[in-house]
Length: 438
Image (cartoon, rainbow, N blue to C red):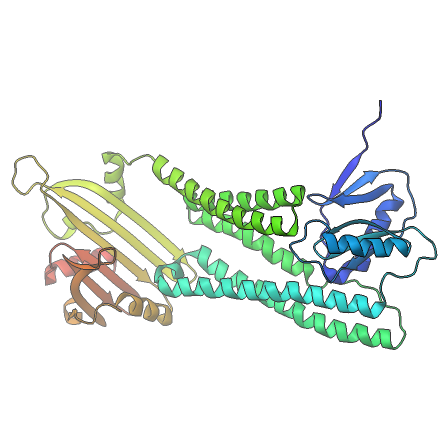
């Protein structure tokens, strides 16, 4: 009975500028008796006798980043190299790995050609990364400008800080690549030996990427956003499973495109389903729980006027970031106007308070909150504020004006947006200001 061969998998990433270092790594493994066999969710090594095997790692210009296995043109290239004394072992992306079979085998390509291939392949990877990261950053900033509340969520601030840093690292690497290329080309022209190594910047890019993932989990935890943590982890796990499956199955170039497109849609579907499962499985708050939330609110309808009814819904959220804080509260009372024991209507109170030590932040919030208030009535004196306007609440979902009164009030260190069912008089406004610390 044949003994099963020992297999070892190594997750050792290499860039194109490190192809000689890659070859030396494979050589070092062979000296330990581990011989490279193939790519399959990492580098696969097979246990054998220690041997002094010379490897060559080439950058194949006709390959693409979507190649998980050697395509037809790579196989033709391998046949050419076989005739020159180099055995083709495996290929992925633009990497092709060869084992030297003849002692007098000539180099597969000249140093000038190898340098040119490396620069072109590495440059395309870096440029595509820069373009993607720049587009992603622009999208995040666009969403920030669309929703001022995100300024008070540390997760978003963290993302908006780290993603541009990663982009800058890639831009610096791209610039350095071209400087390195000119330097290496000069060395070749002067007849000096060249070796293709290049770990500069790899650790920083990897560290920032890891920081982005770890920071996302940490900040979701700090925000006590259990749903955010759940969706974030589900999304990361789904993406990792997708790429693990592709790296094991190793489809063709076209199959890889199809798998990534279908897989991306599947990841979006999984995240959506996970969100629905979380929302619909969340237990409905009991009346006692709703009352407990209502008790936490800094302001309730009963603080500034008489109201007979029961709390039917209460929501309270406090968010704080390096830019300030936002308090959000909603409180519904079921009211029996006729005294017949039946609830006739719901009395609504809805308010947000933004606080910040940075005038620019409050200015941005104020512009965002008042962009649709050009027809509102000015009431700054009534509120004792820098600026204040009263209007009717505009329902963003239906595009209609409701009877609910909306007040937008700006102080030196805060912005208040409050929606109430009935207009507030001067005495009531005084109570509101006292309760909210304005």
